Length: 248
Image 1 (tube, rainbow, N blue to C red):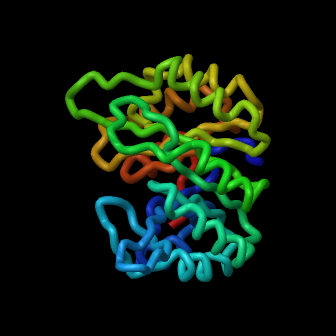
Image 2 (image 1 turned 90 degrees about the vertical axis):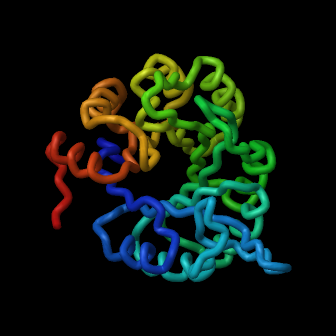
């Protein structure tokens, strides 16, 4: 629980060993990373990589063994259902004490073209292993530069609410920073459905959005229910604007 989600510092995409080490040594409270199933013949081992990459110098097992010696929370992002079961088994074996968030895009969203992860298969697998986990359930999205990008529609948030209605876990909805400003009424409606719901603002590397957009988001929602997993330079500029600079 936090009074202000902006207080939580994130390290985004800590996949390879260099990034992982940097994340562990950083001031971040939460480390986000991506899990794929290794495609090498017969391996089937979860590795730390984000598409289009399909290989890594880091396996999930190695990654977890390093992270478990820290107090940092983790968010693992799954792009396919195949990686979820073996990853949950590893997580179960390693028994982390820190917060664990498990993420997948389970519904198509604005300009979304990537495949969604099957919602039922994902939720059943994760909850079977970890009934107390924080679920991070998102939409596939796209960003088209120099075009008017539509936000999250009422139908999209209603469909998400329907999936989440009978769950008991804390749930955060990762929403793309550049699409939130045009979706405030819809996302407010979604948050009103349960006090277990929060938003996590994330961003694509080439998205066009400003610190003003982030400040607008901050003013539009309850501060305790919005987290910011964003990239530089906006990350530092935003924290400066709200008086939360990260100590060097």
